[in-house]
Amino acid sequence: MKNVIIGQYVPGNSFIYRMDPRAKILTIFFFVIIVFLANNITTYSILVLFTITSILLSKVPIGYIYKGLKPILWIVLFTLILHLFMTKEGDVVVDFGWLTVHEGGIRQGVFISLRFILLIMVTSLLTLTTTPIEITDGMESLLSPFKRFGVPAHELALMMSISLRFIPTLMEETEKIIKAQSARGVEFTTGSLKERFKAIVPLLVPLFISAFRRAEDLALAMEARGYRGGEGRTKLRELVWKASDNSVFILLGAMTILLIMLRS
Image 1 (cartoon, rainbow, N blue to C red):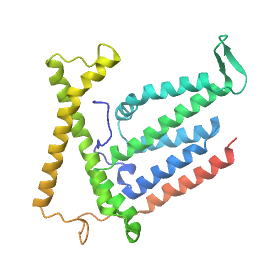
Image 2 (cartoon, helix red, strand yellow):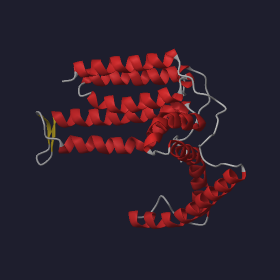
Image 3 (tube, rainbow, N blue to C red):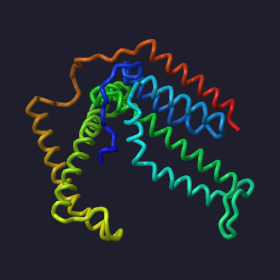
């Protein structure tokens, strides 16, 4: 549970921290799109360079990035193995008789796994360098043009903010329940797969009860403070789009053109 960094904010003061939250959200959105343009060593090298530069500019401790990667490393490994033995393209590199590994399988497995790692590393920077309040304001501002089509921009942004805010709290609550159940003799790490699934049931029931209780307390607190939705609300902190934010999008545009030109 300690390795889950979704919703965690690490205080800091760097170029990435000072960026407008709208710029960070849009940057990640476009990065998720252009990462699929890479299909060879050169284009993936450009994406790796961009990701490493972003992490260094953010000055977020590498330990936090590694903690975010640890829970998904087994998925990356599974993806790599799946492509090694299922993709039959190119020359045969290893031949076990009934099982062969092709050059295309190695290339595809490495590229897909690397793409997955890059996406996790870049998207983790959003929550690590941006407070939930800033994410809420940024999402609401980006969705505000769609209000004329009936999209509840404020409500959607508020829901996302509350979700991000309570992810670490629920993880902490889960860890406490696991320790309490383990002290009562419940085994979560031993036994067959069926027994492990059965052991999760005593964990889920108190966790759901706790989550519903927290949701009810939050609703009562918001009503007591006079919350009536986003209509007519003012903001304490106004978002300011700076020239440095434009430079990031110029860099993204240049990188997109470069990826398209260097594609195989």
